[in-house]
Image (tube, rainbow, N blue to C red; front, top):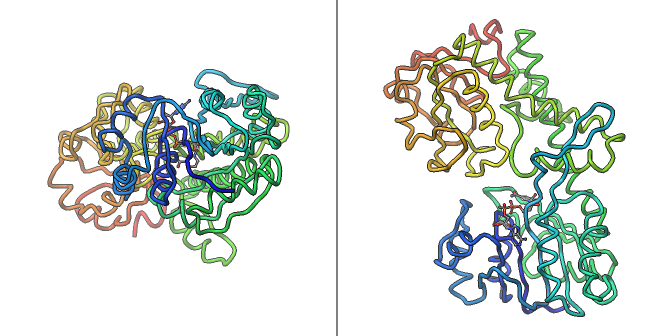
Length: 441
Ligand SMILES: NC(=O)c1ccc[n+]([C@@H]2O[C@H](COP(=O)([O-])OP(=O)(O)OC[C@H]3O[C@@H](n4cnc5c(N)ncnc54)[C@H](O)[C@@H]3O)[C@@H](O)[C@H]2O)c1
């Protein structure tokens, strides 16, 4: 199938790089978003998210005339939906005493409805948003069929999960293998034809529900693997074992790959997507549910660590470094670091946060410092919450010269424990009790 013009609905971390990459590979692309700030920023030639290399690709797509930005779709050969699929903030399901989160699919519904007036015979519609199993057939298809056209007969319909890594999106978009699930084999073929515009990785055809399940299984597996690392970190503290040393040794086994413990699991994907499987069949998913509970409980474990270091938290001044949900990104969504800060504040601590990737972020009730120096000034302790490259490259002596704090609580195993100690810091590391042998090395 040949494509000349496509519409991409949702111009965020996924939709914008996708739209710009299609445009730089010769397609006419209309990028659609409902957020006026996004539209205005892009129309002015700027970008509203931090992603290495994205500015250049967007600039080149806009200046070639192949990428246009609008708040409304237009007729096109294909429509791609990349809108958010968070969980509801205030709605829960319950099964056997287990309270679980519910997917908020309103953005997918309204984006699909926005396509309706423009849907024509022979079009292709692809859902890329991470979604509960059967969303494509049970939610998207009936909405599109209100047009009077029949999915799989009059138009093609696919689900294709996005698996890019923030920070590497532009490269991975092109190089990663891509799964394309069609509601019919012809739909899958049409989806493959579209992605072949720029994808160099393998493009694999399947059905839509399998493709939805693939994405959810990937992220759920990571969540469970992080949960076991976090559980090990709690055990290690109880047993006087240094978790970082223990993981390092266990990972010498050729078939073992334990992930890193940390202050929790965040972001738009891994902390959200497993709930879509729990919601689908709570009676079949106790392991997934409990992994979520462990990872969601990790910020409380960090607060305990801070209490061990500082004693009662009331009026203690803490410089919290990092608020993003993972290293070297500006994405604060569902970040466990935010939760740690809020929990500390509830206990009466006075927390100033330095997030180098988003210093001017407005986060409810959180005091963002305009610079590292401001965060460190007057602090009683430094709390390292994200493994940003900038933080692991800190020179402890230099940090010591900027603050009177001599306590470092390290939740991410920043690389230079000995140097911190030499610079006069008392070190508290997640997964390492003060009594562990390595603390006395
Ligand atoms: N960010 C990632 O790393 C990543 C990776 C894989 C999959 N995903 C999935 O991709 C989807 C999009 O994620 P994202 O990170 O790009 O989200 P995002 O929040 O960065 O961007 C989504 C954009 O969609 C816009 N939008 C909302 N409703 C709309 C509508 N009805 N019509 C048009 N635009 C609308 C928003 O204004 C926003 O700009 C989600 O389902 C997410 O789970 C994300």
